[in-house]
Image (cartoon, rainbow, N blue to C red; front, side):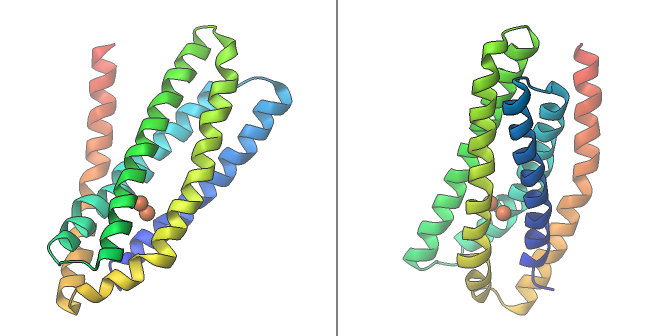
Length: 178
Ligand SMILES: [Fe+2]
Ligand SMILES: [Fe+2]
């Protein structure tokens, strides 16, 4: 398997979550209220799965190795855009958490902000994924030999293994702080 195999598989799960978020936005609009528990679950999914697990492998392994390869100007441009887009998404998620916290504290007028931020995220992910799937992942594989691709795939598995521990260490830490 090429290392982009697991990345593309992860894209499919992110797409499913985006669909669920889309439905949740409709519910929020229909009933004029937010479900903070849903937002917590969606934020956890985006932060731990889409960002840490998925963008983590893209940035810390795939893009790191591509940087050493002397990419064509077009591929280099796309990679820079992808990195900027990851930063943008992290930022929006941070704002969503802030808006949800305000909402929970009783500032219900932040509902429109929550809907706006979640809408930005569900607009963003399909486009970002399409850019990677259709215009980047497959063409950039040609910069790597078969051996390099095998090594990268192994590094992906090793990276994934650490994350469940990282996630629950953080859970315990945050509970200790409370
Ligand atoms: Fe990405
Ligand atoms: Fe991706």
